[in-house]
Length: 71
Ligand SMILES: [Zn+2]
Image (cartoon, rainbow, N blue to C red; front, side, top):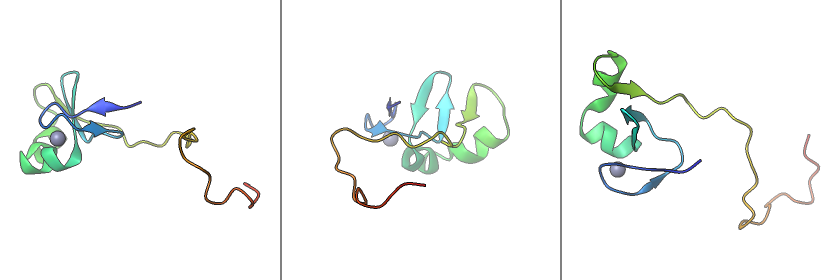
């Protein structure tokens, strides 16, 4: 799922911090000092869960190791 950084408007695949429902990318979160504040779990700031879901193949991208069998 793609999010859009609410600070700079860039697309982010795995946001670092959420302000309410709004995603913030890692660079903007770092610059604004949101990471430390989100760790304290105060207010509407929260850290995003790390993306540990299974990798989904992008239909627009060729598989670099297509000839290798995937385990
Ligand atoms: Zn941003």
